[in-house]
Amino acid sequence: MRINGPNRPGSVSSPTGTKSSGSGATFAPTTADAPKPAATSSPAQSIGGLDALLALQAIASELPDRRKAVRRGHALLDVLDEVKIGLLDGGVPADALDRLVTLLAEREADPSEDEGLTALLDDIDLRARVELAKLGRYGD
Image (cartoon, helix red, strand yellow):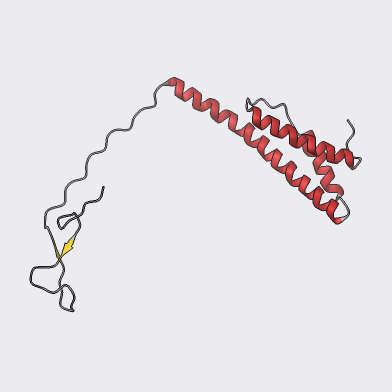
């Protein structure tokens, strides 16, 4: 909300009969009231109940598994980029292929119920296996 007009809070005015522009202008506040005390704050609300606490604990326990899976997916994509760059340069580094094999072996059974994340990680794993098979390093 915006307050317009001569009596708005915080406005500064010059005394009547003086020029506003000049070297001898003085500052005078519009009101000299004492400051008002701050309003009291309401007490903090308590959490709804035990169900809310249990729900927060369940979410907190799933996050590290999800973060670990996302980190592994990013690592696989980074190594796949190294393989792509190696193919464009004319030779794939053997250590990149070894890291790809190691990362593929690290996948654990995904206990999360996030189907989208599981499907995405499956696609990344499949791409890594295809690249390894093309280069003769993957045999299941």
